[in-house]
Length: 222
Image (cartoon, rainbow, N blue to C red):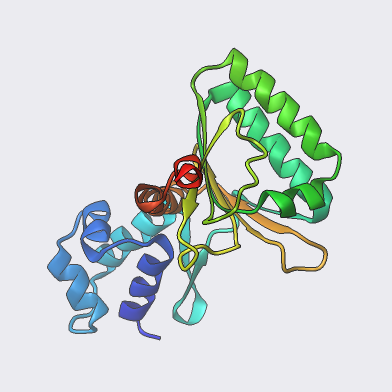
């Protein structure tokens, strides 16, 4: 891999355009394009500006022209205990800061199965919290046709078209992004990180899905 491909791979991790990287590095888009196309070799100062922009947003270059997310601020939670710990973290964040939680890929049946009785504990405390704080919103995208609205007392559900639904949930709250897989053993495996650029990219993706989703109750009433 060349320096140009390394930079392009770094942009891919952050879902940045060449223009976005240029702005953050204080360069022109034309300069970024030429470097990525291996048309020019970047000067030492230029490369420092680019690596600084990546470093500040949680991406680092490695040996042999590699690129990876910086391990700082990344947490991996595993199994039912990890799932409970994750929801504890979301609850504490909302209790302290309020705000909106964006969640997609949700299947309440699977969550209930892995949480057991703890599911009722979490729902109860969330209901109490949202009654005390009115600056909390929960937006949940579920598969079209799914009628399990377990958390409807405090969450707003919408149906995502079946062909667009992916049963790999992700949650965005504050500067945090959590991605889950229920296909691991033990299940689930949850990767939580606090890299604002990536979190923002997933939030924008969620907003796009939300805008094309349907309101379940209206659909059911037709």
